[in-house]
Amino acid sequence: MPAPPRNSLAAILAAHSKSSQAPDSKQKRKQESKKGGSPAHTRSPTPASSSSSSSPNLVAATRAPFAATSPQSQELQSRLPSSSSSSSIEEKFPKKPPSTPISTTTTTSSEASAAPASLPIHADQILTTSSGKQINVCRYNTTGDYILTGGIDRTIRLWNPETKFCIKEYQNHGWEVLDVAVSPENGKFASCGGDKQVFLWDVMSGTTLRRFSGHTQITPKSTNPNGTIRIYDIRMGTLVTDHIFEPITSVCFSADGNCVLASSLDNTIRLMDRSNGRLLNAYKGHRNDQYKIRSCLSNSDAYVISGSEDGKIYFWDLVEGKVVHQMEAHSKIVSSIAYHPKTDKMCSASVDGSIRTWSAVPSPA
Image (cartoon, rainbow, N blue to C red; front, side, top):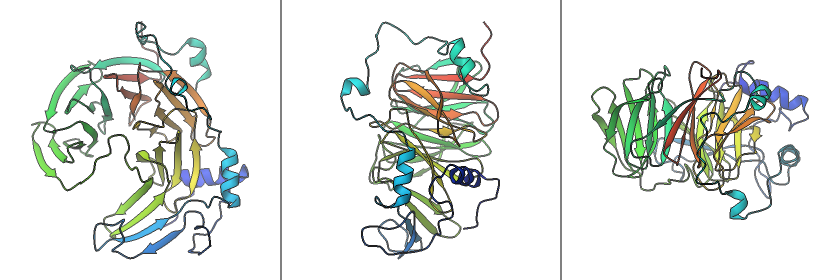
C-alpha cells in the first residue's frame, strides 16, 4: 500500500508525535518473530484459508498491537489519561432527576466562549420519533440536507432537519435497525438490523431493491466483540486485520481516507494509520464501557466527537488528544453522532428516543 501524502492526517500526527517524544514514528514494518508476542502492528501474511477470511481468494494479513513490555507501549500508555478505578454502577451511571427535562440550550455563555468557535455546540432543532423509542443510528445524506435514523422500533425514518418533518418511513426489518449507509448519489441507502439482514433501499419509492443474508451472529451492543478491525480491498482481494483486543463499537475513515477512527468498550477512541495499523492517538474522558456508541470526525478532520453513556457529547482536538469541550445533550445514553458533510453542524441520537441537531451559531431567539 503506498505511503500517505505528506499533508495527510497520518503524516501530521506522526510529526506531532515525534516532536512530543511519542513512540518512534520511523518504526519499520517488517515481519519479526519474538518470544512473548509480535512487534507493533506487524503485518503477518496468513494463508487464504485463515479463519479470519470467509473467501478462498482473499489474502489475509494480521497486524498485532504493541507488545505489553515494549518501550513503545510503555511510552504510549504514559501519555494516555488514566481511567477511573471505581466500578460502581452509581458512579458509571449517575441518576438524573426524572422531573427535570433536558434544556433546549445546553451550553452556557461562559462554556461557549471557552470552546472553539467552529464547534456545533448550540442546540438547533429537536426531532422526536413518533414512537419515542431508542434510536441506534443517525446519518446525514451526502449533501447534508436530510437525516436518516433507525432504532429499536424496526423503522428507518427520513427527516428534513430544517422543518423537523418526517418525510418518509421505511419498514421491512424484523428486528431493530442497527445501522444505515447512504450511497454517494443519495438515491439509495443500505440498512442492517438485528434480523441478520441487510437491505438495499430506493429512497423515492421506499421499496427494497435487494436483500443480503448469510450472517449467523448479531452483536447489538458491539460492532466486533473480538476487538479486531478488518479492512477489505475488494479490488485486490486482500484483507488486513488490526487487533485492539477490546470490543469495538464503531469504525469510520477520516476524510482523506488515510486514518481509521475506532471506538471501543474500554472508554477509549483510537485513531490508527490505515496503511500500517500504527496507533496515532487515543482519546479518553467519556464513558463507554457497556453500550454501542458511534463516534465520528468533523468534516475538516480537526476534531473527534463522541456521545457518552452519561448523556453528554465530547469533543477532542484530533492532534493534541485533549477534550476541548463537553456538554449535556440527552437525558440518556447518546448512541450516535453524525457530522454535517459541508457546514459546522451535527446531529445526535439517544436511547431516550430523541434526535437533536446542533450548530456552531446560536439559533435566533
